[in-house]
Amino acid sequence: MDVTDIITGKMDDEDKQHFIPFQPVAGENDFLQTVINKVIAAKEVNHKGQGLWVTLKLLPGDIHHIRKDFPHLVDRSTAVARKMGFPEIIMPGDVRNDIYVTLVQGEFDKGSKTTPKNVEVTMSVYDEDGKKLENVIFPGAGDEGILEYKSVIYYQVKQPRWFETIKVAIPIEDVNRSHLRFTFRHRSSQDYKDKSEKIFALSFVKLMRYDGTTLRDGEHDLIVYKAEAKKMEDASLYLNLPATKLELEEKGYPTTGKSMQNLGNCTISKDSFQISTLVCSTKLTQNVDLLGLLKWRSNTSLLQQNLRQLMKVDGGEVVKFLQDTLDALFNIMMENSDSDTFDTLVFDALVFIIGLIADRKFQHFNPVLETYIRKHFSATLAYTKLTKVLKNYVDNAEKLTDQLLKAMKALEYIFKFIVRSRVLFNQLYENKGEADFMESLRNLFTSFNNMMNSSAESTSMVKGAALKYIPTIVNDVKLVFDPKELR
Image 1: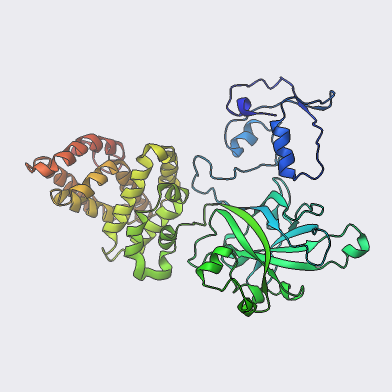
Image 2: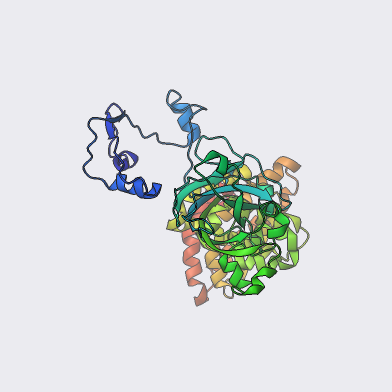
C-alpha cells in the first residue's frame, strides 16, 4: 500500500479504513527482492476479496512526546524503527551506534556436486580474540538481540541474491576490536545429510579501518576464504589477511598462481560475496580529519594540524558530531588554560562551526547549538580566551580582515559562549574576578569603537558587519554587564 499521502500529511482521516489486498505470488524460484518488486509494481490485483483492513494515523513529534501524548496508541512495548540514516537534527545526548548490514549477493561454485549448492549464510560478530559478541544482531525493529543471523536459502541457485538487511549495535568501546564474520554452508534437503554438512568457506570484514575511521558506507566485495572447517573458527588465522578485493589490491597480494597458498592456512576461493553497510552513529566517524580532532589526546603533537583540518571537513559530517566536536574544542582550551598556543585555532574552529549552522543547509541545527550552550557546555574559563582572541582580531582589523569578518558573522553565538562561561564561573567561584571580567569587556567594546572610527578602506566591510551583528549580542551581554554602560 502506498502511504505517501499519509506520511506527508495530505491525508489525515484516522477513521478511514484502507484495504490492502493479499497478492498471489507467481514464480517460486524468484528471489525475495524480485517478488517484493513485482508486488509493488502490480497494478491490477486479483485478490478475490482477500486482504487486510487497516487504519493509519501520522503521529507528529519525537518518541518521548508521542508516548506522552498518545499513550493509548504507543506504549513501552511498541516497536520503534529508527531511520536508516540520520534524522533532520540530532539533539545533544541522542546517542546512537547502529551499523546496518545488507547481505547482497554471492556466486558459489558447485564443487563436486552435480547441481548448485543450497547456500546458507550465517553472520555473527566476533572480537579480535575470536570471542563471539552476544545479542548485538537485530533482525528487525522490536526484536531482541540474537547471537547470529541466518539467511534465506535458495534451492540450487548458483548466484543467490538476498538483499536481507540486519542491524548490528555494538557497545562503542568494543567496535574497534570487532569484526563481522560470514560463514557459508551447503544445506541438504535430507536431514541425515544436512547434519554432516560443514562450513565450506568464510568471509569477514573489520568494523574499523587501519586509520581508526569506521568501515565506509556502501558495497564491499569480500574475499571468500576456504580452509578446514575447524581452522575457520580461529580468528587469528584470518584476521591479518585482506578482507576485501580492494584491500587485496592495495596490499599488493598476488591474485593468481601458487603463491596464493602463502595466505596462512586459508586459500582464496573463486566464489564471490558482496555486502553493503551503512553506519548510523553519533560516535563513529568515517572522516579521518574529524577523527583526528575527536581523538586529539592520543597525539597532541598533531593538534594544530587537526584543528586546521577540521575546517576542511564536510559540514554534514561535523553537524552529526556537533556535541563531541564542541566538547573537544573547549576541552583543548580548558586543558591548555596556562598557554595561548591553541586559542586562535580553537576560536577559528568555533567560528567555522557556528558559520556552518548559520548556513541555510544546516540552520535547523540552531536549536541543537542552543541546547548545547544551555545544558552541556561547561568550560568555565572559555570567556577569557574567547574575549582575548576576538579583541586581537578587532585591534588588527586592517591586517586580519577575513578572520574578523567570519567572526562578526558568528558574533551572536561567540557571546553566548562568553556569557554562559562567565555565568558558570560565577556559580562555582561566587563572582571571583568580576572586576577583571568587566574590564576585559570594556576594553573589547573600546576596540570596536576604535575600529568603527578607523578611516582605513580595508575595514569598510567589517564595519558594515559590526553594525549588522553587534545588536544580536545585546540580550546576552546585559546578563553579565551593566545595560546602562553597554548603551
